[in-house]
Amino acid sequence: MTDTAAEPALLTAEPALLTAEPALLTAEPALLTAGLGDAGPDEPGLLPMGRADAVVFVVGDAERAAHRYAVALGLRCTAYAGPETGEPEIVSYVMQAPGTRFVLTSLVQVIGPRGRELADRLARHGDGVIDLAVAVPDVCYAYDYAVDRGAASLAEPYEVRDAYGTVVLAAIGVPGGTRHTLVDRSRYRGPYLPGYVPFERW
Image 1 (cartoon, one colour):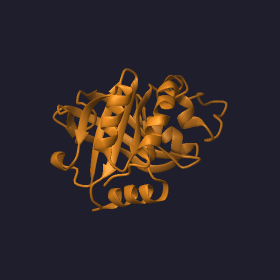
Image 2 (cartoon, rainbow, N blue to C red; image 1 turned 45 degrees about the vertical axis):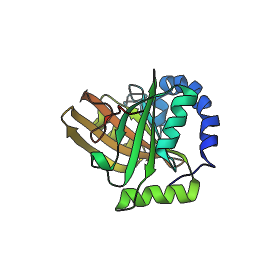
Image 3 (tube, rainbow, N blue to C red; image 1 turned 120 degrees about the vertical axis):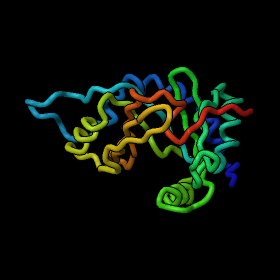
């Protein structure tokens, strides 16, 4: 599946994302607290957090987009997931530079809810950001904090593991329809998340 018309737009928009990344790193607490209600007099202020974990894009052709990001922007592909790694519906390439991580995902086939969600997103909006993942020191606390203040619960905290260790994840939706995956990878030493393998081609 290809989407050549949308890829140039991604490339032209990408430098803005790279220059905006430091702002994401410094303004990150606002991701969970903006529009979720004010803290009471006995409650702490902004939720303490780490940093932006990843910006996840859905694209028509993840491999082609990854090649372009590598050539045009100097990003390095560090991890891959796809049918060969046990992900039958998608292929994903993790592109990194210091302080920046983008995940480019495209649909291979529709089997379940995840495939239907990606197909619907591509049909309605084309290529674009589908998730802003945020690193937090305590996923359960961050999830409860956000949901108590009005965030939509998309996935309660859960663990995923492989030979590299364990990652704790949860997902919330905030006003405007943005999805945020909350990530604690303090007990994980793998290339990205369970299901991803180090990328060694090209």
